[in-house]
Image (cartoon, rainbow, N blue to C red; front, side, top):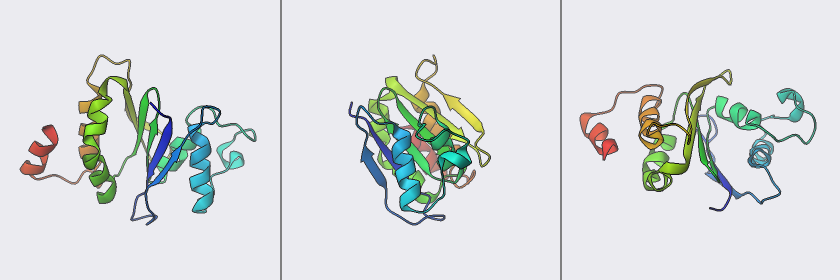
Length: 160
């Protein structure tokens, strides 16, 4: 699988289009998070992350951006989804539209839900014996609008 990143902005916070970039073998996904932050003046920097200049390792950049309400999908091995603890309607719809992609990659899928203080609220990884795909979509439903209840029809559709 090609390495790439998709940032699905929360339209209630930053009404901009989906941000999608390829990530070269010599690059880190976090470099594209920095590009998104710089492009939209979000102020995420090495300094305020407490990192040495040019350090992109780990998930520090991703957690900061997600704590601001934006969702991230890092394509690679594995596919890693970072969800904010409140999904906007557009973010929710995006995940519904791309459900088949995640189903196709269900054996190589990890996710985490990140809170407003960058804490990991929930996570599941590719090494788990659980069905990460189903747990991911359960989380997507649970964090939609901060827990807005769905109709029975919507819930049944998601289970399919």
